[in-house]
Amino acid sequence: MKTEPPSLITDEDLYLFNEGSHFRLWDKLGSHPVEGGTRFAVWAPNAEWVSVIGDHNGWDGRSNPMQERGSSGIWEAFVPGLGPGAIYKYLIRSRNSGYRVEKADPFAFRAEVPPKTGSIVWELDFDWTDAGWMRDRHSHNSAKAAMSIYEMHVGSWRRVPEEGNRSLYYWELSGRIADYCDRTGFTHVELLPIMEHPFFGSWGAPRPGRRRGQPCRPGSRCHGCGSGTCRSLQDRALAGRPPRCPRSRAPAWDWSVRPNRCGRR
Image 1 (tube, rainbow, N blue to C red):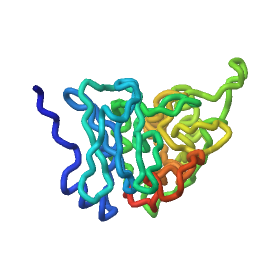
Image 2 (tube, rainbow, N blue to C red):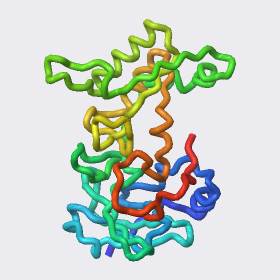
Image 3 (cartoon, rainbow, N blue to C red):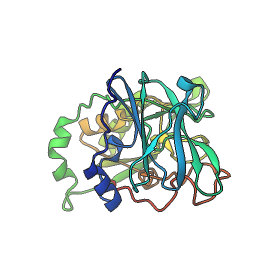
């Protein structure tokens, strides 16, 4: 019998998380493929019981229960044989009146295209080409440096009339926005939203986008042209709670909707 891989969450991680100063939570929470399967971790402080459900177990909450890590509110589990591409959610039973609900993973790196709402096991394997920008970005982002930010809504910035007036994919968008900012003198691009959201008419942003391709492409291309990138504040607020998710029947004290304690850069 194979030994279960060790947890990705150390005692130091728990200390920093509880302190509110953990700046790399995406490396710890969410789903992470490891040797032999995938490790899952989610913050659900008001949960009495949590399990991983998905196609791999017929969406049966009894198959892969999660274990709580002390008093941190973090639940984790290892599911053998599961890898990139697997669709999953968390089944949560609240300690308040036994309320049960299925929830997508707020730290998932990939999600199903709406109207589907499942999370997808994935890896961050984008090949960045912005070494020069990263080396010198302290001078570009200095308080003494000039800054002119161009805010753009990814879903409505330019369309393809010949194809039903669709939005641009990231690979189409990357070169155009980089060239535009270079030509017009903008030093930074603020992208919103680069995250997935179930209602296209909304500017909300609960999960990493999939409908337009790889969301890292615009940043890499802009950096290569000398422009900085940043995300809208409404995207960055999603460290531990989804403020723009559609309302559900869950009361405010369910799931992990306590005030945001997850540190972000």
